[in-house]
Amino acid sequence: MAEYKNFINGKFVPAKSGKTYENRNPADTDDLIGVFPSSDAADVADAVAAAKAAYPKWKATPAPARGEIMRRATEKLIARKEECAKIMTREMGKVLKETRGDVQEAIDTGLYAAGESRRLWGTVVPSELANKMGYVTRQPMGVWGMICPWNFPMAIPSWKLFPALTCGNTAVIKPATLTPASVHEFVAALSEAGVPAGVVNIVYGGGAAVGEALLGHPDISGVSFTGSSEVGRRIAEVCGKSLKRCSLELGGKNAEIVLDDADLDLALEGVLWGAFGTTGQRCTATSRLIVQAGVYDKLVGMVVERAKKLKVGNGLDEKNEVGPCVSDGQRRTVHGYVEIGKQEGAKLLCGGEPLAGGAYDKGFFYKPTVFGDVTHVMRIAREEIFGPVLSCIKVKDFDEAVKVLNDTPYGLSSSIYTRNVNLAMKAVEIIEAGITYVNAPTIGAECHFPFGGVKDTGNGHREGGWTAYDIFSEPKTVYIDYSGALQKAQIDNAEY
Image (cartoon, rainbow, N blue to C red; front, side, top):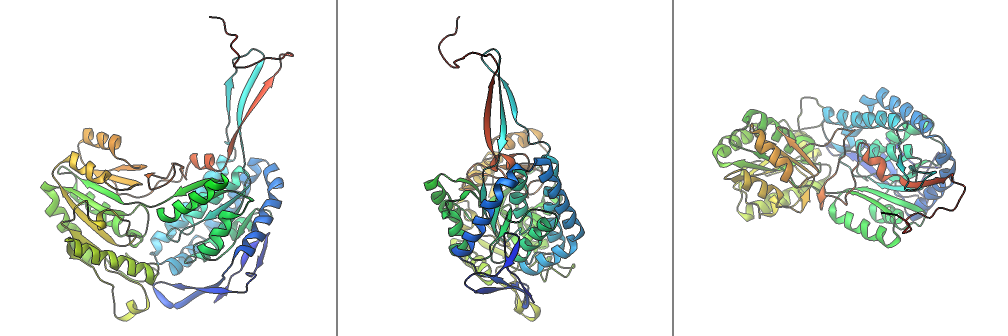
């Protein structure tokens, strides 16, 4: 058993309260991963003070030098990829091939950040006056508070920390209480790579104590949050009162459309990966399968047949394809939605219950579940379940498919399978989502593309790619007048 501590001002320190909590494997609760500090506002105050003190020197460090540290940290992640993946599987549950991908996403994001440190471009714009120039540069903002989810416990922190630090900010990060060890490994790589003391700090603990303290601290200049839309609204409300910058990446209710002319074998592989990868515990999960009537029965039958055969178990066993729910509470939430679906009149085609007996009794396993005869007004077709539950909806044509897909409060990822290029292009135009895939499932984005959504999925910011650097920097406009005289811009002195 490992005993972890907060990381504040370059040192590992316990919570001031002395309180701790346990982090256990959701596939085997006998497996105690570690004991973590249960921190509160006093610990947050120390971390923010350290980040504030470190900010001037870090801001003055040339961006390429900051990028070199990001590169060195990434190299450490490359060397420890398998170790980090196994820790992540133990604390989050998803299978090893997925946790390796999670670590790889952090690696890719770090390499991108290293390169971006030499491309923090501004813009030169011609002035309306003679002997005068104007340009725009980027400036860091100060101390950022970062609140992370449990489903991608290294990739998502990397989306936040790498660009924020590269831009010259300092940070205090609160890992999810269910997956703190992965963030420890990530920040350890940054520290060993040469990030100065105080530039990045970890405070472990619950949202009510640590998260609220970050939101309300006057020296926090911005908050980056990934999680539920309900919590996101609360964060936006608190940040709005003090005009803090706020970046929110929230929920999703993603759908895959399959038209009559689609390659059904390809669509099948897509929906299985989209719906049951990460046990359905991702904001881009395929929660709805919208199928044109001509192929509905055939495709849904294919999905049910394969879903029944998926191997569920401990993610450390590479023969398994689906891991556990992250906690007993999450499994209860999933089962609650299954009961709601049955009460609403949806037809349970497979799954619909926890897995029990033998090794399953030590974890929070749930059978991959497929509902048929779902209508777009049912709760299971509208609310985010965050578990291995797929709702199948029959539609008559393309227009109805897109209408149903758009009839949700969310708009993150979307997908359409068709051989008709005209309909594919039309779908790209009219689907209301931040991401649209053609002939691929509703997965996330590559590290150098913007990631985010519309409607209740966020507040307009995009993590990933160059747009992440817009979140963590402010534009500064500079004018240089070398005329030797007073020139008044935007005065009505034009001659026509």
